[in-house]
Image (cartoon, rainbow, N blue to C red):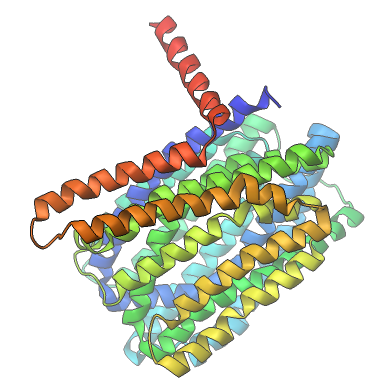
Amino acid sequence: MAQSRPSLLKNTIILYVRAVFIMFIGFYITRLTLMALGVDDYGMVNVVGSVVAMFTVISNVMNTATSRYYNVEIAQHGQEGLRRMFNISFQLYTGLAIIFFICAETIGLWLFYDKLALPESKQNIAFWYYQMTILTACLNLYAVPYVSMIIAKEDMGYFAIVSTADALVKVAGVALLCLCPTERVLWYGFLFILIAFGNLWAYLLICRRRFGVYRPERMWDGKKLWEVSKFGGWNMWGAGGVVASNALVNVLLNNYFGVVVNAARAVAVQISVAANMFVSNFLTACNPRIVKLHAESQREECHKLTCNASRYCFLLSWVVVAPLWLLAPELLGIWLSVVPPFTILFTRLVLIQALIDSASYPLMVLAQATGKIAFYQFSVGILLMLNLPLSWIAIQLTHREEACFYVAIGIAFVGLFARLLILRHIDVFSLKRYGRYCFFRCVLIVSLCMGTLALMSCTICPASDYGLFSVWTYVYFFLVFCITAFIGVNRSERMVFINHLRRKIGAKTEEL
């Protein structure tokens, strides 16, 4: 384990740098898109995309299943096992692409015409944009076996290069979109088709040159295919909760409050995705290690890494969420040329949910690693599916746009403890260890930071001296960073990072 740490740290640093770059690119893309399409069309694109997103959840769920089996095969059977698993996954994704296309053109079209409540003048353009998103989703679906292989091999440099190139092409494409005189929504859809095709081709070339596995062979393993399909099926049940809390809530908001509110939610979710990017990139580097440790029956190390990963995810999310939450009005004003109504409130609520969810992600990975996911996915899936009915009830009772966000925060909090209890049942996961390594430290950090903010708010009035307030804002963020670094990270963990940094600096000095 001592030898594997630098590799994990290196992959984390690579993906963290990528996350910083893509976060700022993503913010700029959203600004350009909102300028090019306008608030109404941006809201329409978001709600139409939600229909397809309900079905593309399949690809995200199966990506998790595929990555899990890739890692198990690498740990147990090496390159030959990886080759066999690649063929099985390619057969599986061919079937999923066919099922996805049929569902999108039947159930999806029914939702499109009967449930979205789009203005009649935009029906034709929205229909063709919907067809483009279906093609984009199919291309992304076929890319999953290749992406999963790169992640399973922990070759994060190439993964970072492709995703960074993807962000740069999006910026250039959306910038050119501003020059189009008409039909910008359709050109926007066409842009994402080209990007999806380019990503698929890039990942194929990487797998061909790096791993020698890039096209399916005539190989059939019905037993393994059924095992992976069953595993993915339970994952899809859990994904139904994600659909209920995201895509279907979009449809619900659109029906009650219109596309402008959907545009505000789209901007808020974009900020949440950017904030979560730091967490997801760390997990991308950490997930294969958790799965491999469990496959090698190193339960003690696996559980310890899961607890630490949960803490790191929360800390990475906290140091981003805290300034974004506090400075949301100022940042949104700088970022967007036009800030849709409710965007500031939605952004702050979505960030709170993202902060809670960040601690849950490594627990999800451990559940996948055990392979015993039937009870886990059934229970968590039902809990997440409550998002839709509870949001509907909350909107009916309060008639307020933000009601569904409060519901989502409550379910995220309950979901964290539900996952811990289920893992204790299926894998003898220690709640005492999780509390000591993660939960209590995170609660202490948030309490100290919020207490500091409350004290500063009582003593500093921003209206009286804006310059002084700005200085104290930077002081507060510095304190947040220091509290997080010294309480959230122990001495031995800091020394691992410092020693790794010293070795890198020393190596560069010797080269010079």
